[in-house]
Image (cartoon, rainbow, N blue to C red):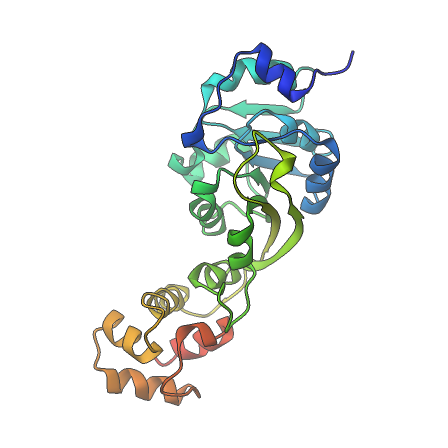
Amino acid sequence: MDTPSLKDIVKSAEFRFNKALGQNFISDKNLLDAIVADSGVTGEDTVVEIGTGGGTLTRALAAVAKRVYSFEVDENLKKVLSVSLQGVENAEVIFRDVLKMSDAGIRDIAGDGFKVVANLPYYITTPLVMRFLESDLGVQSLTVMVQQEVADRFVAKPNTADYAAITLAIEMHGSAAVTRRVSRNMFYPVPNVDSAVVRIDVNGTKLAGENRELVHKLVRAAFAMRRKTLANNLSVAFNIDKQTATDRIVSAGFSPLVRGEALSLDDYVALSRLF
């Protein structure tokens, strides 16, 4: 017997979508399979999914992965998931907020060295991505469905409008690429924006031997007031006079009038050695 459609399951369970939780589910099987393929998940992998939703992505992941641990905050979805995940033996739904859990708490459930896959509620995109990138859980990769404009920021290049502190924060931990663009019409209910899938392959040795915290501080400072020069922003953040900041910038090989968005990660690393 075929599993009922997601819309039918939601309707029969009398589930009401919670706008505050940004609930937009995917029902198209081709798209679900494509997201799983983009993630590179194999039968050897443990997957941590964030936002079980209607369970359709969970089911698609479980068809390929060794084990899926899916975290969901809305317990009203239990009735929906009892149907949509019926017969799926290698997936477990944990009704907890992963952003409020420690590394140790997640490790007790999912172990180490897993892959993260998620159709994220857009309001937690950046905190969620950074929570796992900055963890000690040995995360191998993150494949996330995000708002299209956020995806553009994740993979932006220097001297572009989308280039931002989050671009560099992600690059400090690995490499990001957009794997596909997704129309808003592929979701139920239909959101107000288009989306994109981004895969971030984590490199735990990136910036090895460098002062990572200082690089982070430089990046945050550089983009704190985007219209100001880098010298202005660094003088405020590091409580030094503008001339001292300018001298260090020039010593690193940059124009005294350079702005933060013109520098690459390698440039910030070089600058950090002078601070």
